[in-house]
Length: 91
Image 1 (cartoon, rainbow, N blue to C red):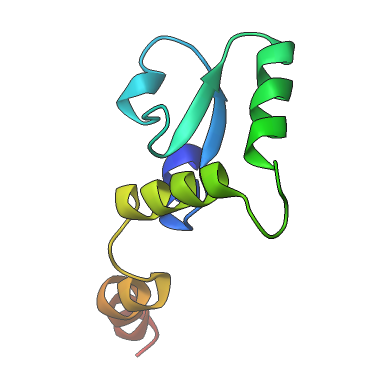
Image 2 (image 1 turned 30 degrees about the vertical axis):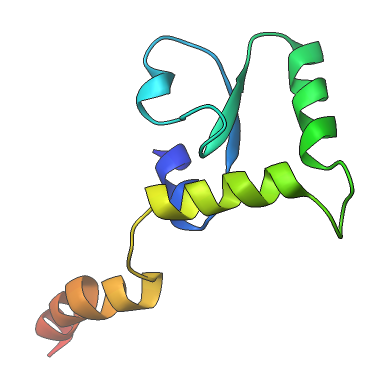
């Protein structure tokens, strides 16, 4: 579930390509997949090209990760779902 957590924070991922990962990581939308260390190195170089001013690909993937992740902010989710339970338990 770490990939889902990253998307919720607006962090795109570079993930090892394995069976079923495509269910979460949509190539060129919210992340990238790699099969070899050289592919990963190439992806990282591409993502950070122009850093910090002009990382077009990284910004695009970040936007995709944000749209994939929860539409609510962490604090809103906490206030709606967790805090009432905590208050109920501690009185």
